[in-house]
Length: 106
Image (cartoon, rainbow, N blue to C red; front, side, top):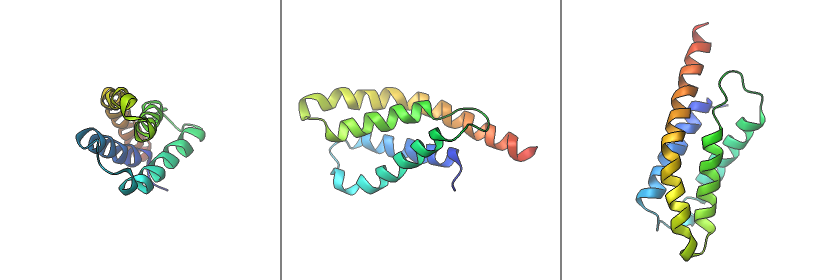
């Protein structure tokens, strides 16, 4: 099982790609997104060993999923939410990394 911080880092990269190339064909990213979303949901369902760092990730996977399936006239609002959630996701990822490092050092 991967560390949560690694999954969150991968989600950051994925979200940045969505923001940078919003017209990318969703068939090319579907499996990758499904895997990330599944890992995030599983991590959120488990009891937190330290800092709970999945809230922003859940917002992000919801926004990305809605953006991918929204009609054109509604997709820009979802894309805006993806961009707005990135700083929150980065902060939670940093907190998860610090928490994992502290647990390893004990």
